Length: 82
Length: 207
Image (cartoon, rainbow over all chains, first blue to last red; front, side, top):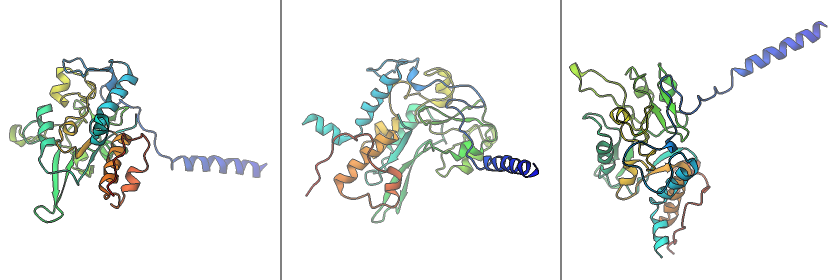
């Protein structure tokens, strides 16, 4: 009986010790000690919104930005012209 | 989408400081604060190289780790931002940052050190997107407008790339293959790995 109790205690102690070795979970995106922030795909309430995507639609925002990123790739630009 | 990243191609950067100017103008950054700057190595010597440096929006950001008031946060897109209403201007983040990204306005009364200011990847801060409050504290929120950072989009030689880390890595890899050098740089393979997003058109490799 004592052996079982000792084994159980050792197991609990091992779990407790090993739990300190793990990486602390990251805080959820957009949270801080202060105010919460909305995701970028929600759009901005100003007069400078780019055309070609719908505010609030994450998929269209991502696709729009991906297309815009390829504007930095002149190899893709020349391939389109040919 | 993966995490937003900057990548500066030192083979292309011509030290024009266009990125610095674009950032200053876009966000009305105050005098004495430089969210972005161009660092030149071996200036005037053969082999001179320049790199545009700002906040790198680290995946495991040391500034976030050391901040005593927990004013930093990371967006869904991997952009590291901070809340100026929480920041106390202690400067711990500037000691922790390996890139010198955190800046402190010192033009107040008696050279008072103000609250920290840094590159936001043109993603504003914790205020309503596109609001006057957001602009006054953090500058324009171009990501919420469906745009990429001003510095990268204004770069005349496209040395500075900004966007999804996988995509900009693919663009850079395409260039390296085209010019036939660059991949021998130490750590390149580790940092940028193998293509994952297609990377657009493949270049014609000169024979």
